[in-house]
Structure formats: C-alpha cells, structure tokens
Image (cartoon, rainbow, N blue to C red):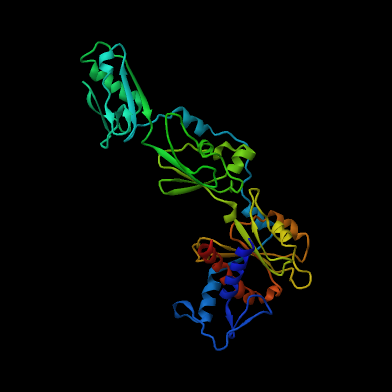
Amino acid sequence: MNLKFTLLLSSLLLSACANNGNISFVPGSSLDMKNKQVVYADNSTPEMSQAELNQRAVIYPINLSLVQQMREPESYARSNPALEAQKRNYRYRLGVGDVLSIKIFNQPDFNSYQQVGQNNGQGTVVDESGNIYYPLAGKVQARGKSLAEIQQIITQRLARYYKNPQLDVSILQYRAQSISVNGAVKQSGKFPLNDVPLTLLDAISLAGGLTEAADTNNIKWTRNGRDITISLQDLLQRGDAAQNQLLGNGDAIYVPSRADVQVYVMGEVGKQNVITIDNNGLNLTEALAKSEGISQSFSNATGVFVIRNTPRDVNGKDIYVYQLNLKDATAYALGTQFKLKPNDVVYVTAAPVTRWNRVLSQIMPSVSSISTVKNAFF
C-alpha cells in the first residue's frame, strides 16, 4: 500500500495547477517552474484550463438535507417470489454440442444404434445446424427445444412403425450453455448449465466460494452487454433474497477485490492515507479517524472536502465536491452518515473557505489524475 500511495502522491504533485510560474499542491508549498517548459493540452492556456475545470465542478454543503437525499434504501430480509417462479418454470433448452441418449423400451435391437460423435463417446449429438438424426424419425430440429418436446416429436414419428412407442430421452453431456465466474473467487472458470436452475449464489459456490479479499457489495452480473451490480452482503448478511438472480447462457459474474475499492485522504490530516473500503462500507468520519484526524495546528475546520468524479450530468458537471464544516464538532455526526465511494478524495485544507477558488485549482487536477495513474501502474 505504501508504494501505491507514493506513486499516486507523486502523480498528484506533478498534476497540480500552475500559479504564477509555480506549481502548488497545498497552500504554502510550490515547485519553481522558472526556465522550465510547461505544456498544456490542446494548446490551451492555464487560465482556459482552469475556467473549464471550474465549469465542470459543483459544490454541495454536507448537511442533514443532503445526507437524507443521498441515503440509500436500507436493505432488509425479504423473499424473492419472482425467482422462485422462474425456477419452477425452468426448462433446459438444447443447443449445439449437447449429447442425448434416446432409447425405446422393449426394442433392444433398435437401441443398439447410437450416433457416435467425434470424441463424444456414444450418444446422439446436436450438430452445428441444431439438428439430431435418429432412425425412422429422420432429422429433428433440437436446438431451443426441451427434452419433453424432443421426446414428443420422435414418439409421433416412430408411431408410424411401432404401436405406442415408449421413449426415454435424457442428456448425456451438457455442452451448449455455460456461465462464467471470475475475480475474487477460489476457482474462476466456465461452468455448464444443466437441467437444474442455477442462481448467482449457486454459481459462486461452484467457483469454490469467495476469497477473503472479495468485495461482496459490488458484484457485477453481465447479461447481453448490460452490467448490473449485486450485493451479496445484503443477501448473505441481511437476508435480502431479491439480490439473487437466475442465470442464463452467456452470463458472466465478476467479483471485484477490495484492493480496487479505495479512498484517498490528503491535506492537513494526521496521516495522509489510502483506505480500503471494507464490505461494511466507509463513512467520512471513519476516514478522518483512520487518518489520525484533522491537524489541530494547520487545518481549517470549515474546509473538509470530498471530491468525487461522476458521469457528466445534463449541465456538464462531472466533478462533485462535498464540503463538511467541522467548526461545530457535532458535524462529525453528519460525517458518519456520509458514505464514501471508491476513488473519492478526502481533502482537508489549511486555507479558509473564502479562498475556495485557489483550493479548487490545486486539488481538481489531482482528482482527475488518480484514475489515470492507477490504471497505468496497477
């Protein structure tokens, strides 16, 4: 963690804004830029870059109204009737590569026939066109059909030659459909779907369960290119069965590691820090406490900020800044209700809030640099 923090901090120092030939990271510290070449992206001036940055940022005071608006719904124990209905109605649908066993009762000679597929052993294989071939029944379109439907089709065709034929149709090998589980699990890989419905929780069990580093709050379930975040923490700890889902062919489950879920505490604190968010979450007051609190000698109690990159909104804002005023120590109670998110930057400034423009110009580029440096080195 020390190496990561050193690299990140170095990048933040280099990315701070230029002020009168100097680069400043915190008030009172600077890097002399005299006789050094300074390159700005797109041939813009530092004034233009700063103006664009200010237009992208929006500031909110952390008060009771804000924390109530941002409070996520409490999870609670509840059933999942939709999932139970899906499981009751589940039928495995055949696909290319599945291997079937088809037998007719009281017809030993007929049953001696088995289509042999390459490296599949004995059985009737669903070919690349989705068909199977069976004596007297001919070609049967199998892809997308259930075993019961295949049995009905072949029975009807064999009824032309046998009186009341009785068939047994089963699957020898499931090869057509699968799901994948990767990330912080003990055994990543692909797992076949079969005639037993498979849920997200079942899939993680097939993968050997979670590792100790797993982030159980942000499990990603991908279906048809769409990502959905699932909280196993709510499912396992709080009994919220609505988090469990029935999986289908091609679904992917990714369990992230908590090593990727971090916040950065900087500025006038006892210890500048990189903190990993555990599965129970992390609030602003906790982050300050884990960084040995704000400096009693140098910090400005009104200048505790949380800087967060977000998707750009309709007003062109994609940097949200939240300010906590700790001049009244009871505001720490508000801090316990303000939940931090991955890659948040907690910054405690020594400058008065009235000098916000200067503070903003120093820390905004630092926030933008964190994701770039993290991707480059880790």
